[in-house]
Length: 123
Image (cartoon, rainbow, N blue to C red; front, side, top):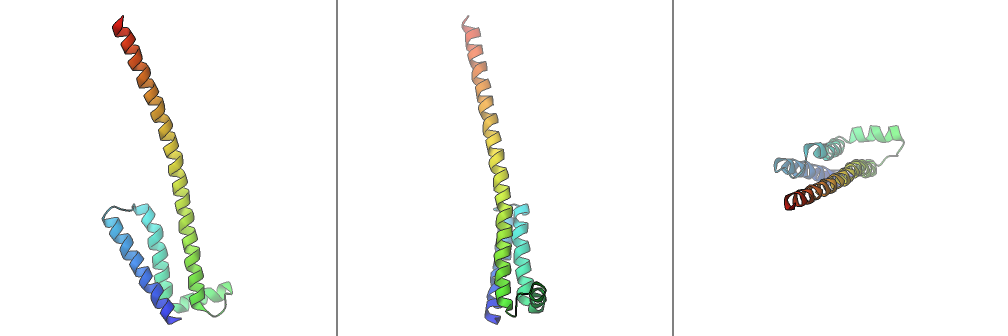
């Protein structure tokens, strides 16, 4: 169990450092980084304090293997983060569609004004 918990600790620290560096370089926005930081901190805390993990396991009735429970938690956290990003992507897609429609209407209006101006100046 200890090697798996140590590996999860290292991965958690790596994710935290990666997210913070990405924030510093403006590769990721703050509101999106919070999900990753929260997940990584949760895993870091649980991998360093197995007693918390064991209490959670007994509360959920998962048996006596903290490493398996931690892997299950990792999968659940990834589902939550992925779901959150799916919502964000859906909103962005809707906003892009609305923006494309507005641009098309503006282009139509500009062409109409150009044609109107050309016919008015040629008369």
